[in-house]
Length: 314
Ligand SMILES: [Zn+2]
Image (tube, rainbow, N blue to C red):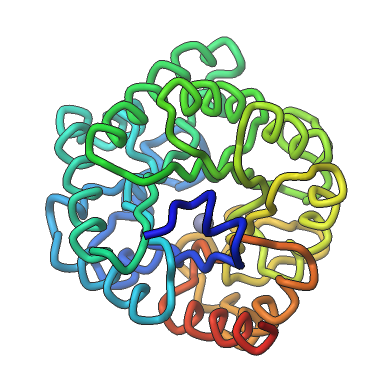
């Protein structure tokens, strides 16, 4: 099978969709909203990936659905899988077990039909405790990357980082592992800058300089809202552009669905149609985007539409 570098060089790569929100809707992932105000930075902020060990069949099925819908890459559900975040949700002691189980499931479904990416996200330490926690965050991320490498992922997707500073330490840890890394940041509340004040162009350049094989954005915005920021990143760098938008509509005042009152319990009221992902697939190639998938709210129906759109413009 072609490596991720070869795949990106050859053609547009179709990723998969969002696991945690979909599995939360199916009753297998805890949003935390029954106990705490999710997103305040004070509670556990749940949405952790223990489903990999508690309900492996549910996760296996969702991987199968994405593969069947046209994904070239399956992401192991290791999002929010650092010991820090898992520990806050009561699963710290299972950090190894959860990361290994998630990769094993994704590899089992992918077989020789798809690449398997290890998903690595921000720790939430920086947003909770500030930049003084960056060294600790780095240690946690580096630990998870070592686990993902040992478990046998093909490459890494560093995603949903709000602060460029934390993305940079994650990219350094990725480089030490020797695994190729796709790096995408998430922008909120507006798409004009990241949480530590850097422009989109600065983010794209910094990620490329630290060795990312593709850079871009994921989560928080629907495809149409994300497109202008992707263009800014594309114009600032020569590496491939990656995009995994959310399937939720945002507003002109707030470009991030996790900051809207609908998150996390009324997301159905802001769900966009799969047609918008088909349209995104159609424009992606012309826009120079090389890796397209979806994030929160994007299930297999959306990936199938995205793949149709990409094929329509082949
Ligand atoms: Zn997301």
